[in-house]
Each structure stands twice: as C-alpha cells, then as structure tokens.
Image (cartoon, rainbow, N blue to C red; front, top):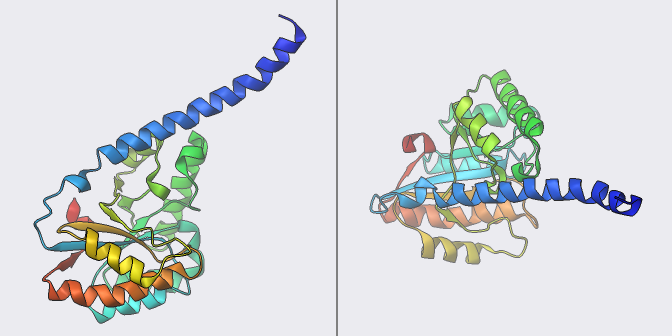
Length: 235
C-alpha cells in the first residue's frame, strides 16, 4: 500500500465510522417514532395532555403558569435541566401547583450526535440537578424525539418512561402566528391528544404566540367537553 492510499484511509475511516454511527441513530429514531404507542391510543376519549418542551424560561413560563392556573389545568413540563438552577422558584411553583416535571435533556443536545459517554453524562447530571430540588424524574422526552439505543437502554435502567406525542404544530417556527397555530390545533385535535408545545426557545417570541394560542383554544376545548390530564396518567 502506497503512502497516498494510506493517507486516504486515515482520513476516510473516521469519517465512515462517524457517518455509520449517525445513520444508526437515525434508524433508531425512526423505529422509536414508528412504534410510538401514543399514535395507537383510543382517540374517542375526550382528554387532552398539554406538554411543554424547552423550558424553563423566565420570560414565558410564568405567563403560561398563570394561564394554566386560571383554568385549573395541570400540564406536563419537559424541562432542559440546565435551566433549573436559574429558575428554582418557577420549578417549585410547578411542583406546588400539581404540574408534572419531566426531563428534556441537560442542554437540549441531539442524542443522535452524542457518543455513549456524553449521553450517560447528560442523564446523570440532569437527574442530579432535579434531585437537588427534591424532584424525582420519571418521564423523559429526547430533544427533537431523536434517540439512540444506548439512550433508550439508560431510560430503562433509570426507570424513565419515554414520552413522545401524537400532535405537534411546529410552534417554535419564527414565522408562525397565533392564527396559524389555532388552525393547526383545530384541524388536528382528537381525543387522547398528547400535544407537544414549547414554553422556551423558538424565534421571534414563539413561546408567547403559543400562550396566546392557548388563551383562545383552552376555553373552546373546555366548551367541547375536553378534560386535561398529565402524562403520568398514560402509564
């Protein structure tokens, strides 16, 4: 083997290895979503599960909590653990008002792009942060719904139930509006709807648009006879 070929192998082998690793993560994610049990629920039950990702956000989460309290609704918050230390009071309000606090990774990193030790550290550090606040975590939603086999194994080991969704309306998009979001919800809503929404991140004040959307939709859903539940009732 000449030196030129050797140099090519030195460059190509790591690239091929990483691409293979990435592709396996894509396949795992596809299977996870394909087997998502929430898509096979009985849609005749008049229940809605409001779930919120990417918080805690000091600007938007308080407004959302006020809205939920006004309508006596309990929701499920999939929280980025790194946001907890700066928002301890909000976490305690969630806990005291009966909301379910769940995990949405440490820093919202894509599990497909992480190596096993990074995934392990992500879970361990996240759980440590919540435990310091007196909170036991039982439910987990991977960022973007992307997962690896090792991440799924750790969820089983740590007794974390993976919770995806059966309705998502892209409420994080910068060009979305309250009207667009309301129309999506009106079109997609069904019984036993596990709705993925966001109280953090997003561009152009996207979480505020989500809150404004719920100000309209919650009273309408209540008039239609929908009851609101938290994700612990799914298990």
